[in-house]
Structures are given as C-alpha cells and as structure tokens.
Length: 347
Ligand code: XIL
Figure: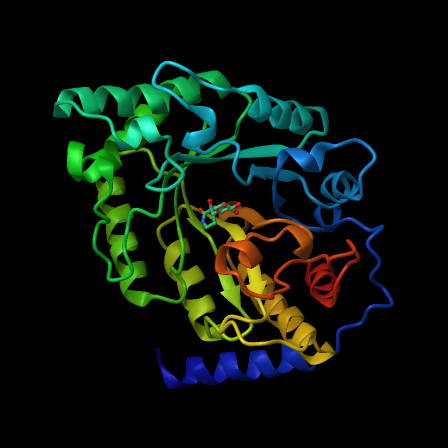
C-alpha cells in the first residue's frame, strides 16, 4: 500500500480512537438495527428464543438479521442419509418471519460439523455427486421463499491459499465448488448465494486466492452474489489499513459484503487476563474502525454486519479456544459494553 494511504489510515485511527467512548447517550433500550442503514445480525441458538428471557429481549430489540449458530449445519439438519431434522431450524425461521427479521442460512457445504454418515460415505464419484446435490437441494427447497441467503460454501481455502482437501474435493473434485452454487441456485433461484471464510482481511495470500476464485465464477456466469467475511478478529489484528484495503478489494468485485461472524477478542494470545477499562476501550475503538470502513462500501453492497452471538457468556471463543475472553457486545450479565455504545454511535 502506498505511504500516503498508510498515513491516512494512521491519522484516521488516531482520530477515531481519541473520540472517547461516551456511554451517556448509549443505553441498550435503544436498538442497533433501527439506527443502522444496513442489517445488523446475530447468531443464535435455540435457547435464545425462550420466552421471557433477556436473550430473547436482546435479539428481538437489537438485531434484524438472524443466523443460526449451529442448527442449520449439516450434522443438525441432515443426521442420516434419508432423514432431515427441521424442527429447531423451522422454529428459528418462524420466529424471524414473525418479527420481520431476515434469515441468513449457514451453512450448506463445510468440512466441519458433518454427520458421521456423510464423513464415512463410500461410493463412486456419481454417488458422491448425488448425495451432495441431494443435501444442498433438499435444504434449499425446504426453506425456499423463507430464507434470504445462504453461505453455500464455508472455509474451502486453507491459510496458504490452496483448496482445502475436504471430503467434497476428494470425492467430487475441485468442481464441487461451482456445482454447489449451481445446485443451490437451481433449488431456490431467489436466494442470494455467498462464499464464507475466515481471515480474509488478515491473510493476504488467502484473500488473493478467494478473489481469484470469485472472479472465475463470475467469468463463467456461476451465480455468486456475496462474500462472507467472518471477522473473528481481535483488538490487535488485523491492522486497520488491511481492513480498509480488504473491504475495498471485495467491493471492486461488485458483490455483496457480509461481515458474517464478527467478534473482537481482547485476549487473542490466551494470556492470563485482567479485564481493564483500557482493554474494553480498545475493543470499542476496533469496532468503530470496522464500522467506519464498512460504511465506506457502496450502500447496495452492504449486506450487513452480523455478530457471532450477543453476550460474552455464550461466546464460542471461550469454549472453542479454551480461554478467558470477552469478544461480544454484551457482558456476562447481558449489560451493554463500551463496544456496543461505540458501535451505536458509529452508525
Ligand atoms: C462455531 C460455533 O459457534 C460453535 O458453537 C461450534 O461448536 C463450532 O462452530 N466459523 C464458522 C462457524 O463458520 O460456523 C463457527 O461456529 C465458528 C467459526
């Protein structure tokens, strides 16, 4: 990146960070999505829908787009070859419809959270293509007209920019990627189709590979409408100029950009932690930077910012990485944190 650009971003960072986090105008009886010009989403679990809970109150008031944190994944929706389990997913969809919220489907094809039968399936290339197509199309048909968009493929690239060696690549070949988009589109032509992955801001090599992949699909008229940047980031990484650069590069593709799983770790190095106001302030400032650069994307390409949960108490970061952390907008007692307030201000 040119030096003048670097200076600009440094200057911007200083300005945005110096603006003190004001909590006086920020109380969580306000609503993020009512203020925003783009959808504000959250990943939820079935317990978030329990009547009378603070979880439900937060989801309902703050967010107008819903992603299921787990219930739409293959192991939950498709537990055996001829069985689909729609119950919990339908409950979420019905909730979203009743509250006029958008539902984003996550995820049709992935290498994790697969049902055992799929992982151990044996058959010819044709048999594999059949179960692959049936999986995608049964799910897309079931939710047709109710779900706005799908993460068709999740995390198909490795950190060094190669195609991950998943069961789908092994048994169908690299063409599984474009086939997934074609099959999903055939089953639900009005759903918007996304490719979703992590570290696309931090890791330039991976970003280049994904951009090439999307361009290739576009050149061949394969329906792809958006990129999901997961954004499991931290107060340290990625640096602010990379955020600007990555958002700019993806907007140049002319597809929608969904910050699909945002959380901001304050303990990325898994140290023993003393949760200070300074750390919370750093988290709030990082959020302001993300929000600022997101709002530089042309409006028609902003699919929304979705958080991977609401309260720190339930964040996947703690259990998955086994560390103390506070990556979300609400604290363990469901109180709004400085990061919530700064985000609200930035909208
Ligand atoms: C995570 C969930 O949050 C956890 O509850 C589950 O145990 C593992 O998966 N990238 C993704 C998400 O695309 O599906 C992951 O969700 C987090 C990383």
